[in-house]
Image 1 (cartoon, one colour):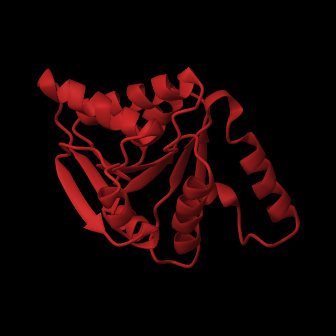
Image 2 (cartoon, rainbow, N blue to C red):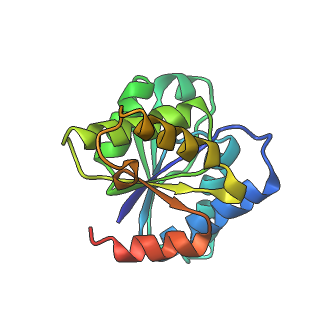
Length: 186
């Protein structure tokens, strides 16, 4: 399976977010799943890349690390080195499209405006039939609670067609993510 991971490139986050990102990345690549990510060396993105590269040194990796890197990130020297596959792109819109096209499902770790943009792009494209891909929201310490409350409010106001849960799957624990991915038949 190819799993897009959308997440923060901020280094100033709680340690638990980094531990959860490492655990997820390790589990995916040791099970042979590819990780498709934004290719930036900072924050949770960099943490994921570092974990995969460390496992690769131990020859414990079956999955690949696929980075989709906007030109401005590459030119600024902020991209991860030594990815299995690097896909250059022009801008963030291109990056989203490529990440969605090169993945079967997405997982959203804690993130900000960019992560929100990415997950809404996946969900809105699915809502009108471009694909049937879903986003797993890794709700570490309730990070996505206000997001799901907003979606509930939008549903009550009638601006979301059908249940938002068909696009977003909220998982509070790593075990829930594991079970969800095992149940999805892609």
